[in-house]
Length: 471
Image 1 (cartoon, rainbow, N blue to C red):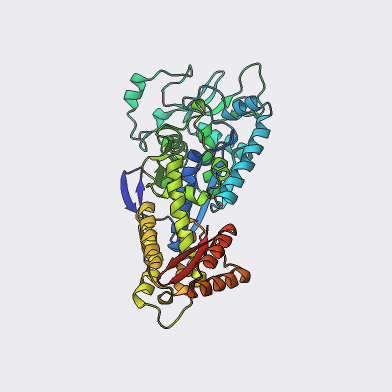
Image 2 (tube, rainbow, N blue to C red):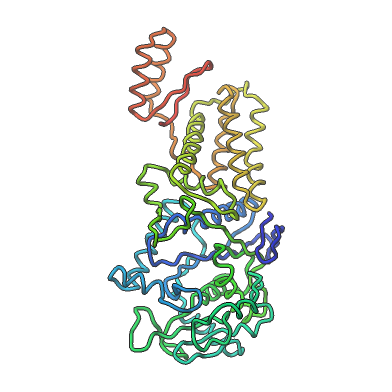
């Protein structure tokens, strides 16, 4: 298994702390509003990562946080907490906002997208006491300082390698950027514990040694990762926007406290635009999973759209691109339905069986190479083209089904569930139409075709016979 490590800038062979075990941390959603397709993109890629690691024989222990407090609208520790902002916009409490959008995210992620659920799905607010203890440990090591009226801040000057993940030019940042919070010693210093605004009460705030307030966004990931996975992990994943601030500050906190390498491999996915424009609520170009479902398009088509670009390259979404992915999915489903029309016989073509037998391992090899999803899709297209062009009596149902199952196992794209066998009544109708064609009764043949179409069954007449599929 080879993966591109952001920390080194190289594609490297995966080496784990413990043989056959991968400890994996994924930065989760901030649950202050409805997630959009850009939010879900990375989780689709990391789902393939988990599936590929599992296929490689690893046990994957994975933690994903739920940010329900502490994520400010600005990366420089200025501005409002996104949860409080969401609560004000909806006229409900921040706790209600967290519950509402956590439930939506879980439904969309694990029911609609059918992503593999992490071993540990952890809410930041469930770890407040441990976050306070972690902050106290940082303070005892002399890594923090207090700004009156603001809270506890991490002193990045105490780390000789601060910014190593993002290759930050600290001197350049100091020269070129103002300090948003008065009292910060360096522009790169960041909040560990923020105090609540004077003369006001937040929905989410807690007592601490530094005053009533709430944890900084970066603190939760360091604490949750340590509590669930230990001081060191194998892989940490997230979006490229996390590199310069959030993940850089996670490393500073955790390694400052433990003195150990936090994560060996850092994986970051690039973004997707909509019609070539950055996704933004302010310009109103948000597309949600429900928008896709409402158009009658399977979310597996959106997965194929995601897989058609490599996770490290920027993507683009528009409805025409999604339609192309949906057409690809429909073709795969059409060919998948052939399994009900294949019967294993001694005349099965050995060469064709070899293609089907080796296909899952070839797909896996593409994914082993830094999650090469575009290559995986191309391999699947090629196999389906070969199957489609092969007489049914030359194919093995057993190996074809195994191939379809491997697509679900590795990519989470289900071609079996949506294509069950047709009913006995429809089978009898198909036999009746075959007889009509033998008798050259084309009118009756066409009438039966039209009737089947109304029932959602399409027909493909070839020189080798007729096959059916779902419209």
